[in-house]
Length: 161
Image 1 (cartoon, rainbow, N blue to C red):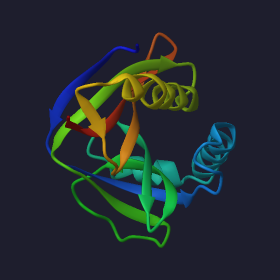
Image 2 (image 1 turned 180 degrees about the vertical axis):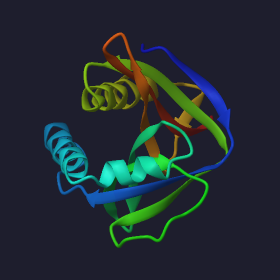
Image 3 (image 1 turned 90 degrees about the vertical axis):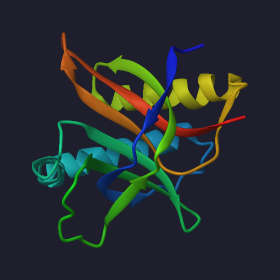
């Protein structure tokens, strides 16, 4: 099983720019392609730089959230002051409570995000006996680079069984 911890976190806000994912939630290849295409678009057109300029720290969030029966995906940053919100943006409230935290590294931010998501949802959560994910937003958090690799964590709100 992947290395993980359970950590208590205060509530926090991520301001994100989003897209609706059209692939079936079990189509991992399709979802990953949609996510990669979205990241490339927000990186190339400067929207990610605009987000980083308003961030409270250096973390960049890739957030998954079900909204109105749609699977949404956001590029976001932790912020305290909320900017004027364009139509494709969302203020994502993460609740205070316990979080499953899975750490990892990857050669690219996208590889890191996919690896963390796979470890958390493919290994840790299916094998967990004392806690469970009951929904709500979850995020792969790119925290920085070291030794040529991106490093970060997956944060998933959980409850004790």
